[in-house]
Image (cartoon, rainbow, N blue to C red; front, side):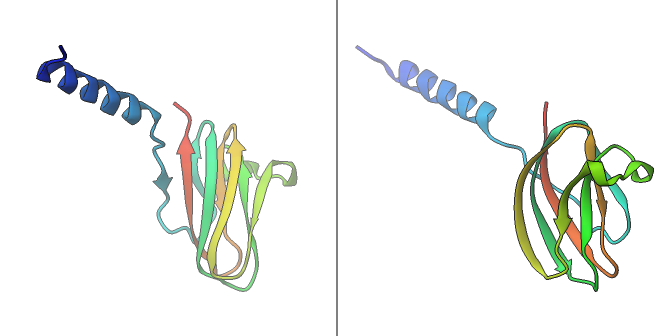
Length: 112
């Protein structure tokens, strides 16, 4: 017969397994100038344009603000307020270069 301790043990194991599978999303501070958000690899999940500005920006897969190249571009940041899904993998890091007058937030995960 299954006892209370067996049930509690099973629940504990289920909670631990579920916790290991959960995704740890991180959101950047509001970015208004070219900024290194994170180094390493992970997934860019979305871009939130808080203030649209007058020009589009770009998110780059690179590890420094001085190494942004067209070949490293992951996604254009639209110059319209809103939340834009991305689901893009990055391998080096995330650098955000907002467009003129833009304020944006980036939601991402970092690979462990």
